[in-house]
Length: 246
Image (cartoon, rainbow, N blue to C red):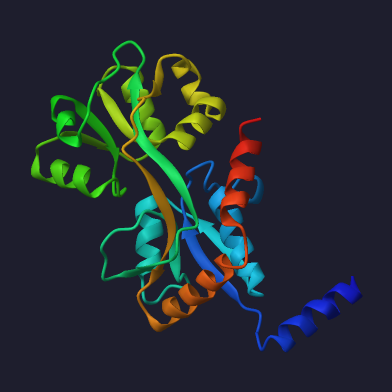
């Protein structure tokens, strides 16, 4: 152990680095992020590996989503960002290079699947969304304009229950999240066989860390992006997701 510690110290010194701890916020969004999961989830595993490749330690604190975003943007907080997040136009945050992808689509009731070709076709249905989540630019715009009838809840599991009960026709969700929830969330046990992913995806969405738009945030954005270039983020993500399905 002494030899390893000495090696790490010498390696950091030779690279001109000073080991630091970076603090980020996240939410309960398994299998990507969850306090109780191995390595705290697939996205956390990728982020931790990227920071570690640059000689730094990542500490993630978990909050309800709206609070996670608010704390990350607070100039007086110790947090320099939050994740995983989809890219969107923002003056408050700087987005990292993609750290993985998530298949974003619609969960539907197996007894009454929906049919659609374009997002505009969804106007005939009631659609569940999660409050403060970014979906797709087109979908969010049509929801904001009232062209698509949307009902917001605080978490994905609530939407799955509403779809299964026929209270909404479909709900926006990541396919990996739905798969995990149906297998592991006791409250959704009765939904097995009652809900499914619609065969058409909205999009494969890149996942990012959203860093605070500040000198400190810019510093860690640069470090993280350099760390991503040193690891195989896709392999880490896929390996984790495959292991979580067993």
